[in-house]
Length: 491
Image: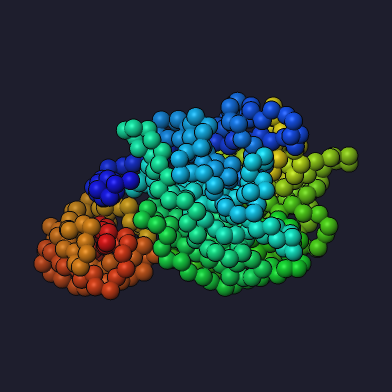
């Protein structure tokens, strides 16, 4: 993407022109363990408000576990991946998109099966740059000692040209975290545009928090708290899941238990909210997901589903649902669609998904519909990992960088703040219509105050010396009431 195009898109957003997010959610699947079977004829699973559409998908590749993809603003397929390569709408590899997740696991699995990391890829877009896509994908190591060993954690950047229809790989396999990590989660920042990328160092209580902005990764910080999920005994699949509200997290191991956390979308701070133990059994599983209202958490452990309240969770996790005798499949990973349905993938190659419908409000039972979504083709552990695109800014907070003007109680609509030059390098000038004593406060993208000054004229200048490049926003107060909001970019 050309640099001038980027500044134009940013200026468009600053001037208040809305940019709609493209339709994102679809789910490509299809897998067979019989190598003499023709691979073509995969399926698309497309959740709708009142139903789940199953459509043919003429892709020549298999989806053993990993899947991510994106639609464009007109609902057309732009690209997708099975964790091995990036494919375009013509189902051919996009130039520059070959060989994602390089290494031994890629070389061992990709020619026949697809990549082996369940929920191992996800895509975010930005309200200020809706045609820029960040593919976050989790590599794997053939580490038998650790049973399932993830890492490095990668970023691949993709751009879509709305005029030519071209999909371009801007960068590939950028390493975000080099070492061994656990599964990741993505939560929209309180400013409504950027994203928090959260993961943990394997076998520790160290949480990584990386702020993803259209300009790239920022603010890589770590925080240590809670249970460290040591190895052993915490083997097999693990998961990290966010609530629809973006303010709660749960980290789960089917061998050890669940850590409950609260999350501040503005500052990125995590706090402990409880821990539930789980006896060490012989079976795996390891999926987790929140209910539609963020009040309950579901966990899978092979032949059972566990459901607990987030607030005041139990000390020990016990089964809320056990399938009838003779049931032959399993419960592995979970995905919640935007309409509140929960899909549970099987461990083995099966032609169905298990389903939990919205409105499952009983505190001690999980209303699981066995094989609730029948499929014309077998799938394996393939499960999507789309974040909650519907989350918006924390309106009225220091994080709300999308507000250009504000309504001050009793003062009607506030006059606009004019900030220039924007983007800025050394200083920025703020102009408005109000005379009289006022206070100006500037914050960074994490909501931390970086400048404060008092002035009485209709304009003020803010020195930017010592501030890192990135997005900042300004609020002006008069007699304790906010009368103007603006934002700028330092470069």
